Amino acid sequence: MSLEALSLVRQVEYVFRQLEEELISAVAGTVIIHIRNNAVGKYGIRHNPIESKNGQIGQAEQGMTASQVQSFRQMAVDSLKLKRNWTHGEILYDFSVRSGTGTWSASILFESNYNLANGMFRYQPKYSQKLRDTP
Image (cartoon, rainbow, N blue to C red):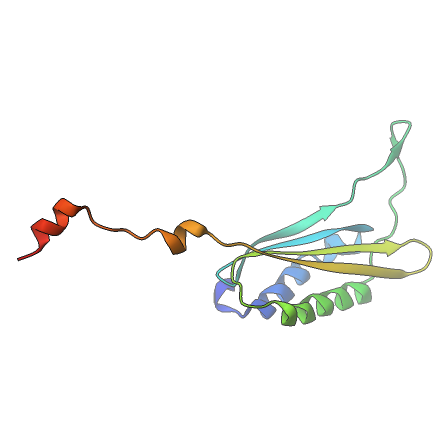
C-alpha cells in the first residue's frame, strides 16, 4: 500500500514515527510537512542552530522524551481538525524543550498554496484549428 492511499491523519502519524529518533535528540526546531493533493510529499526537521563558544561545540542537551514525542504526535494529528478546504501547502510544527524543567511547547502554522495558472488558464485551440474541426 502506498503512502498516498492513507488518510492525511495516518500520513502525519507515519511522519512522526519516522522522525521519532531525531526528535528525541532535538532540543528545539521545526517539523516541516509538505502537502500536495492531501498527500505528504516530503517532510523533515529543521533544527535550531547549534551554538558554539570560542569555536567549541558544547555538550548536546537532552531532547524530548519518548512520551513527549508521543504527545507531540497526538497534538499534530489533532491539529489537522483545524485544516480547512485546502489540499496543497505546508504544515510547520515549531517546538522547544525547556532545559531543566522537563516541559515542552509547540506551535502550529498552516500554509495553503494555490496555483493561479491551473484554475485560470485553460487550453483553447487556435482559431484556425477550430475552423478545421467544424464540419
